[in-house]
Image (cartoon, rainbow, N blue to C red):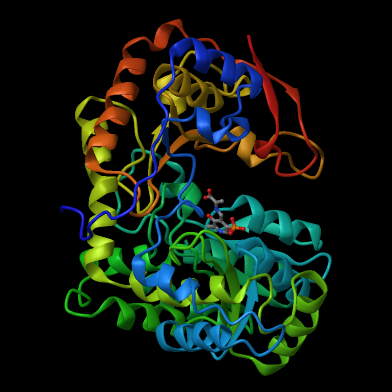
Length: 452
Ligand code: PLI
């Protein structure tokens, strides 16, 4: 599908030489997070906060009501969340992890267990900081890059029930249900699975909190793939998805199509009171949290734009386009195409590099040097260490080519595909990396490496 928009403002990007990029990656400790953005040609590090806002959102920015309390933009954001997601209360935060911090603090007691459909870095970090143990209850196929399922983000209901049996429902404050599942490859969860998860959870007094970060993409997959939903609108599908949940955390930087912002949404008035008393400590007044009035206005408008079917069809078809080119060239990638990115299976790309030598980190660095394309490691470095200090060894050792919303054209994606295919032809020559600096939490952001 061609772009469902016209371009009326452009931002030049810099082309660099291979020598410049070799220098830049060395300075960055072979970590693409530490590269200067001006040294990047096509930036597929993340779809988080990197989106292009519309003229409608930018004009909303001019209507920012920057009063310290009772901003009208908060009312617009609240109304948008109530209308599209159906939750009663909204606590604005500076971004998704601000909402995760508050949710984890109001829900978790030390010694609790929080099941979820695969971990996400910041989500698990907040759960663990509050004394919980994260338990992965996603279906086994989600850990297999080759398994081809329409809803590969689904929860394995038996795993969830087993956890309830093993530790007792009273030790499980909530299940954390991501729609879509970032670390599994942007894979969606079906409505049938959401419904069943909620039935099991609620029958045991366990709450359901969704990670709504990419919920519009999930809704689009439901419309395209799940029987009975073809004729439903995206807002209707979203409302049904959230009708099974007690609340959600949201990073507006993804499916809110903004550069900053997020929120925690809730139905329970007591939980809202607890969240509202914490947000003033960590973020700001309950009527602005971590956001300026103008940012809340852009987010309120962005939530509606992300629920537009043409927007979503184009978004998913960009991802599919890149996926198809890599698949045709025989590149090992996570199947099927997900919602926000194409994920390369670095274990299969570099089978001679052991996981301890960071194959995905290596591939991300090589891709940058080859082409100026910036990608992100989503493997052993992102997975971090367990409580005993040992590496988590995730089955998926991936490099994510993440497509920002409304930023790049299909021609940019051709360049990306060519670069990956060239690298694949020379894969035998490449050696791994060793880590020379490691921070204690969320190490992938700032760790440094050297070539072996
Ligand atoms: O980056 P934040 O704090 O606005 O949101 C945290 C966050 C929560 N859940 C999920 C599924 C995410 O993907 C997420 C952030 N993701 C980033 C930054 C990414 O590059 O995927």
